[in-house]
Length: 192
Image 1 (cartoon, rainbow, N blue to C red):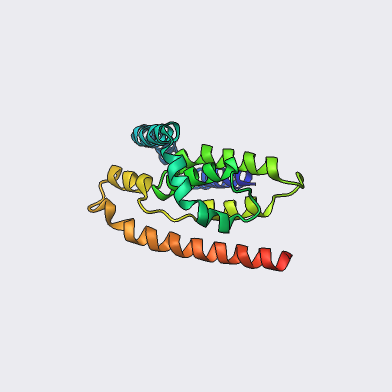
Image 2 (image 1 turned 90 degrees about the vertical axis):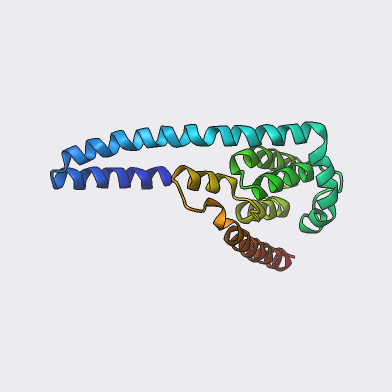
């Protein structure tokens, strides 16, 4: 669906450009956009690689497991259908920590592993379990303490104070998490 939407936007933009005779503007936009895209990737890549490496070291050293033990009581309440020793809880913890640091790219592998582990425990393989739905809500709306990627983007574009969004990000993601988890709780209650 999203491919069709982007395709429509691209075709509409090119059509309007051709309709109004702005050929040089079209060429400039295409070339500058490609250059800007590559530059942005190259600027963000070191940050993503650094934090992905830190998360991997934390995982291999057992630090994420220890953090997982600290939040396991809370996660057990959020995911009552998962076993107490479920591997999924460890991956969920890693995903939450990475998302809290604003590192969606580093969080994605942990999220995929968590879903994979929850699917193994899922009785009905054709539909998402309650735990999977709760995790999706938590992952989508998760609290971000330090929006690292956004701060890096703001720095790339020479923001006067790139860190000023931290409090706003915490409040916005806290509100979205509370709302999402509340709706998920209501959905689970109605299902029973």
